[in-house]
Length: 173
Image (tube, rainbow, N blue to C red; front, side, top):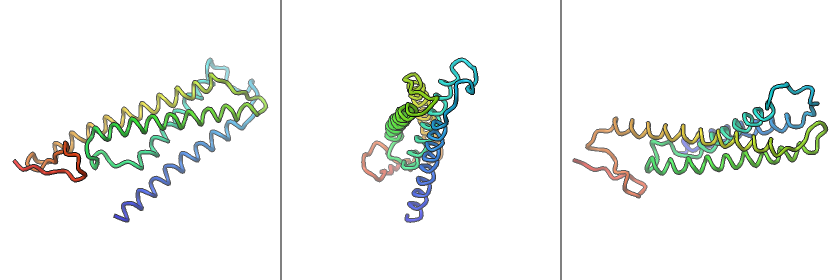
């Protein structure tokens, strides 16, 4: 069991390190004072960049939180796992949105940069889209996992997942 916990700890550390590195990259890019002439003259390019940038951040945060969760095979019920996914998505969206607000505040102090509520709204929209997309992808994975688990186990030894105890009760036919 200690080896398993060590692997989980290493996985969690690695995932949160990736999130930290990405937030440092966002901060570094925000710190660059770029005149308006240097930005591509594409309609709403800035908003698309914010949407994408913070969508990626939210997906990375979601991925990092998953390292703390049990696999869909190991949880008491698939429905409980799905409820946890909703919480993970909402927390990931909130964290990415908060970082977007701090990024806009940071930009208000830089030359050639400004704080713009529309940029923050694009950050929030990107985080929301990515958070809910990650949640729906993982929910469908949990459903497929449950169906696969049901098809692999013989009927005579399927666990009774309606029991709320930590250990499944095996029913014999």
